[in-house]
Image (cartoon, rainbow, N blue to C red; front, side):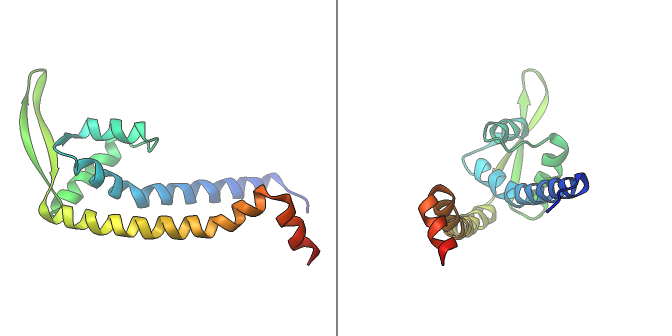
Length: 137
């Protein structure tokens, strides 16, 4: 099989698109989880996500926080700041906690499914004897 630059480019595009969709899919869950620990300022949410290597910019976070608030999952308080304007601190609403608890269950199910589906491939990739057994069949 001859691999062209166009084919490589297509593969890179598919990988990047899939990675983006995977990150978008878990971003809301991660944000709710961070906020569940207590009142938090938006820039602190961004910092926690960066520490977890889930890079998010303000232009992504603020619309998401607004949507979560409008859906009744978050509330916020304005807190005076010593170094500038008041800050908006977010917290989960009781409804947000219920949604997070359901997402925790969903995450556990998804993690199990992914780990289970990857397990055999990982065994085959790490074990030359398994691969050679299958190729001899």
